[in-house]
Length: 150
Image 1 (cartoon, helix red, strand yellow):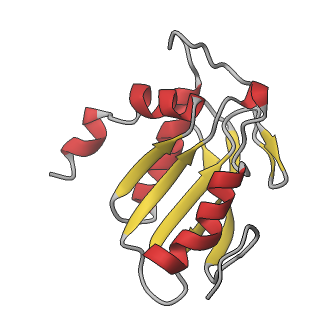
Image 2: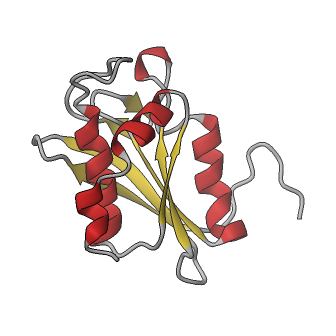
């Protein structure tokens, strides 16, 4: 099989909404393998929304198009607060601060991880791109979340 720039492989793709602890609804999508349970879950944290970042960035879109079929991964993509894409606009407004002070996006990361837990998706991996890397490093390791899994 030849994979080209716009190749879309089989997966079950479902539009989702994430609910944040501070009362916002974020839009997203979960893509899972068609023929088997996922072996792990890729949680995509997009680049800076003030510079074009969104869940439909080409790398994350292609991951959702291909990794469920090729690697057996679930791929969760979503727009952080106030971010727009073809999927829609998440409620709220961008709060990102490069110093990490007062970033309300911590609630967005928590909502994505809660979705993974609630839907019993396996082995979550946060994958950040630019601003998303900041979010993963700052808010991805909540000891309260992991203590129940040991």
